[in-house]
Length: 433
Image (cartoon, rainbow, N blue to C red; front, top):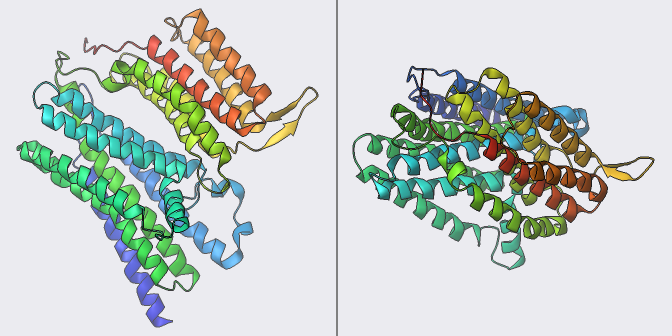
């Protein structure tokens, strides 16, 4: 018992050390603002949410081991990082995607002056988007299962993929480091940021090679794993957000616009989402392990999240008042609903059987449309797009019993709203006043 208690104490100290390293990286961040005045509020808010989620993961696991899973209310399970398809999983994937968007600003910032550094940032951002997809789609868990079915073991396919991703990251970070100056320090901090979530692979090996007896030890293992990933994301955010700071530091807009990739590649993004939607929807609907994450939900969630980022740009630049955050909040809620609400819950009405998630998405979309009109935000939205969104909403209600169709329509709805918000948003930097 004494030995077990000592092990748990060591693990908890490691968790505290991980969080200290993460917060020390965050304190070095330069939050993007046109005034360039220090403002750590947004970053510390995200860090506080991360801390609460890790603490809740420990407490939920501890209670589950002692009293059973039924002792934890369903609403509390929504913020359990150890589970899939809940609010906590969406938060983690959204944080990775936002970090990826800030990294894409590195391409905008360095594209004309240091093209090789710009390409390096694109490569790192691509890895972040893949990790975001894995967080919701359970990609590496399924790849592990494919490896076992092929007879090469759980790590047979994961190790080559990990080696490729590590090589891409190391090459990109080395390219940034060789640029010298402030980029060298950024590269070293990036290395530390990726090392924290990278340690999870070692932790998973220890998880299966050691006996975790007792509720405290089991809960500590969960908290340490999640407490390694989230601080690593915060460290990466503290570096990537500097790209956006660099864009805003040039008051003449010489470097481009914040999240310019969402504006420049708007057409390609919409076409790509629409083309991918049928394939991913069909593959996701055929998956039998329903306890795992759903890849189609990630694509839909990212469509709504990208729309929220487009709207938030105007607020960050001071072009819009705080009331526009209502639109941002609705878009984020739509994004979260795509992950946290099950696509299988249906109920009977007088006319037909409808899907619970479909009803929620359509209702939120209607509120979003009304609020956008009320705020005069949708002045650039053409009538045909409004009609198309309405048609998709009606189809989602009527055809949502089939999983593949429900997934497809959810993704299409996200893509259309993304396009609508992009058309209504002014993309040129505006630093007047």
